[in-house]
Amino acid sequence: MRPTGKLHLGNYMGALANWVKLQDQYECYFFIADWHALTTDYADPSRIKLNTLDVALDFLAAGLDPEKSTIFIQSHVPQHAELNLLLGMMTPLGWLERVPTYKEQQENLTGKDLTNFGFLGYPVLMASDILLYQTQFVPVGQDQTAHVELTREVARRFNSMYKSDVFPEPEALYTPVPKVPGTDGRKMSKSYGNTIGLTEAESVTATKIGNMSTNGQRIRQTDPGDPDLCPVGDLHKVFSSADVLAETQQGCRAASLRCAECKDGAFHSVRNVIDPFYKKRMEMESNIEQTWQMLRDQSAKAAIRAEQTMVEVREVFHLSHELGEEGRSFGVSAEDLHNAHDLTAHSDWWNLKDKAERAKNLRDYWRSKLLPRDISLTQEGSRVFSSLERELDEPLLSPRKKRVFVTTSRDMDVADEWHFEIPSKSYEVWMLLPWRKEGYWLDCFAIPQKIFSQPFAKAKKSMKKDEKISVSLRKDGERFLLSIHGSEPVDITELRGNYEPLK
Ligand code: SF4
Image (cartoon, rainbow, N blue to C red; front, side, top):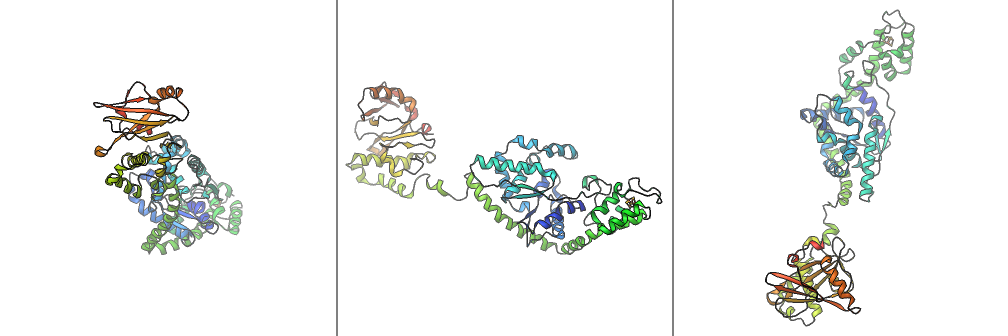
């Protein structure tokens, strides 16, 4: 419920009285939607807290029970805002513009500028309020059907877009709502100025009912009337006991009951509903600190439940607060880093006899020290730190699932010239690592397919099965020239240390 002022009998009969009953059947969450109030009342927020207190006291006076339900303030549970932001990312603008109340309210609330972002987005906030508690039912009136439907669509879109089942699709729970007539016979509504307040003094109610029009009935008290055509008759229908109702209807039709007496009866029937409520509310108003503390405690309780949902939602958006699996497979493990350091620090390493082992160490060093952290190569989605050595059998995969062959140059000591051997298999990127032991020099070139595909295809024709393609790299001044199996050299200087082809 939005905190936009004191509640009236229409709110009570239309919503609160039903909610009180629902508490015994369901696990319920009732909240005061102060953020929602700001979507239209942003220009003057001065009454938000007072109105929030008003609604809270009305909730409690009507019989909402913090022992049975969770009763809280929306803005005290920041998860509502977080979910609103995230669902806002994936809710199409067109859905919001189509919500019937959007245009309607813009036209009706002429005194307010409702071209603000918050007002357009309020159905997403509403969807967040509902979905945050993985809600099954939303107790609403028929006029809220469009909002619940939008919430269902948002849940559906979320679940299908992210292949999840975080949100059940909530259903509207329509509870019987009596049409509560206002003092002019129209539906009781603040915008018609025809309300009877839940906290108004007896004398105010008496005056309002006393001044009610009889809709042209019984201009002379000796005329018989028709209580079905009179707003006072309507009040009796909602608030009077069966006996009183029958008596007044008969008295009206027979002209044996004066309108003043009839109105007095309606006044007593209305006050019979208001008085216990009023009394309870006054008791609580005398201890406002305690009510506020209750709201804070209850909000903390709601936040615990809301956080459970947000943990799932953040997981879906890869925003979880835990480092998790992604962190474990990201970057360099402490052990690998240690080995990499060892690689350069260990004097024996450079004298390793086994060329394959030396090549593997160089590749590991390149991977842990030079490969950018956002381009960790994987093998079938798993970590491959130790599988680099298996490169001849299986390709590595770039983050975009490109097949990558990683190799170091052969261990030769020819200045400014490096040789590589590449299996004649189909790769999308060759990662060539020329190295020289003087100065611990290791470089890298990511060669995209478009550079090697033609000479590669040509070379393959003249080769035996399992023969390797020889590739040479030569430094010519500042330029690096690549030749594939004797092909014309190609300038690949710009590919030096350039990881674009891997992306
Ligand atoms: S008796 Fe009552 S119901 Fe009949 S016209 Fe008068 S006020 Fe209306």
